[in-house]
Image (tube, rainbow, N blue to C red):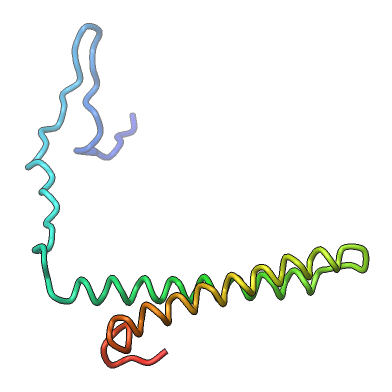
Length: 115
């Protein structure tokens, strides 16, 4: 006869008509702590994140335009060139709107940074 090692976390054998014992749970999960509303840095941080996201979107639009032109064949080059021109125009529009908003906030979007 062989003996298996005892596992304290394994379920005890249950006979017919019996219910398996359930482990007692510890404390309920803690409530997530929220930062205090109105922190002074939140506005500047949010604006910096928006500005960064806009710059990234403009860069992605330009990269997509380059990829369109790079993979274009002779029979669809004109259509790809038109789509690429639209993407570049959109990127310039994004960045000009960002620059206008940045100067409206008093210079830099985030104090101490230059783009």
